[in-house]
Length: 143
Image (cartoon, rainbow, N blue to C red; front, side):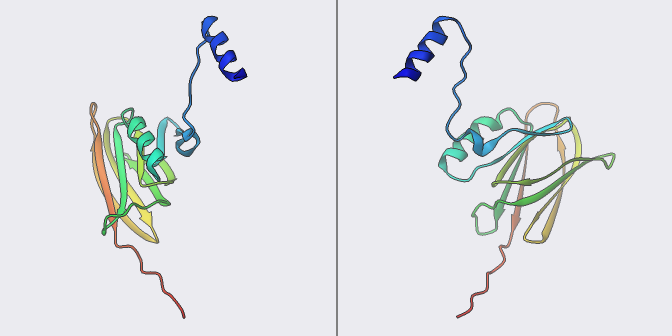
């Protein structure tokens, strides 16, 4: 009740109040130099939040196994057409959104030791979507 009263007082006083969903920590917006990006998408709440956040970015990457299930912990490097590395990170979920300057890029994503490289052009308006798929390694079992 006390927090509701405090919120009402702030609103009456004209204070700007931002309500942050409980899952906000799951997909923190990150930056690397001038590049802003966010990754996540594990679980229903995270999936919905990523869909909402994705509208702000001009590059969408998706990481999945060839059988269709999503992958996380994918190492990612994005290099511009001049050969400069603009992003080097690990995707925390199956989606990564980035805000890049329009231009040509080489994207290398590595999962379980297997690198996949795609060349793409990020448009001045709209969004480019790039999908990466791997054959998931079979885990050995011992009896």
